[in-house]
Amino acid sequence: MKEHEPEVMTGSGNSGASAAMDALVERLRAVLSAGARLLRDEPMSKRTTWRVGGPVDVWVEPADEEDLARVVRECREARVPVLVVGRGSNLLVTDSGFRGVVVALHGEGWQRVEVDGTRLRCGAGARLKVVAGVARDAGLGGLEFLEGIPGSVGGALRMNAGAMGRCVFEVVERVRLMDGDGSVKEVEGSRLPVRYRSCDGLEGRIALGAVLRGEPASREEIQARMQEYSRRRWATQPAAPSAGCVFKNPAGVSAGRLLDELGCKGWREGGARVSEVHANFIVTEPGATAADVLRLIRRLQEHVKRERGLTLEPEVRIVGGQEGEEGCWIAG
Image (cartoon, rainbow, N blue to C red; front, top):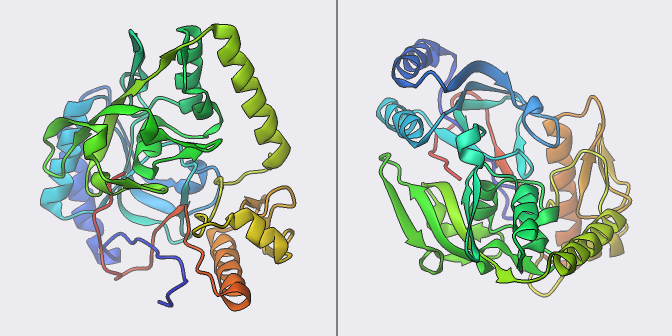
């Protein structure tokens, strides 16, 4: 792989592993609670905001932490990779799909948002838009920037998501997480190493929820900021299907501005094109494939490298692969 090509995280297995996967599914069905949901060969095009991607072997929605721990332990024992997803807003699954288990924390219990003084206790599945709304109604400011991030608390923690010049970990007090053996612990947010668009402290772990800090403010003041952020967002971001910003900003440079200066708006590969509204967004049309998006990503990276000598690193997470590729554990 060339230095500037996107890394594709792969699941393990091949067609000969079907029996082993069937056996894993039967074990999961035996141990999961009645509130859990399990699907086979679920198309990821239905589960991502780009609306592209092949099937995952097993899609699981655990009802609670106990269910999730059972999934983690069974997959660990079977040496099957696990991918934990939020709302699919920062994810590209290749057309060959993901050979493993995808876990989605979508149930009601995962979406709780509770006010505790100046803090919000949020489940990993809570939508950031909902979190911002609850904070507003409780008179808690400082969380308005979350309103425009199209994802969940768990995904935002994993990616240290940000908007309007702020990042999630600026307001995180504590994180509840699960280790690869299914054990649960809570840690202070300041103890988890984070960097731009990444939380290294969550590698190999699953974020279960977080306590976020707010600041007392009037509801009117908070609402005004949210409306201003919304106005700015819709004026500068496309409405077509996308995964948000595709590339991280190189040091001291806006990736979107860089791509705009290099004339990349409107570039196309099949059903994927660079947005005319914001050059760091790739949007998809009906019939687009993950391969279209990947080709466009690589083309943009090569162009920037050639013209400016800069390496564009994808902000989106790219997963999937062909049969026989090396497997890995993914949790985030």
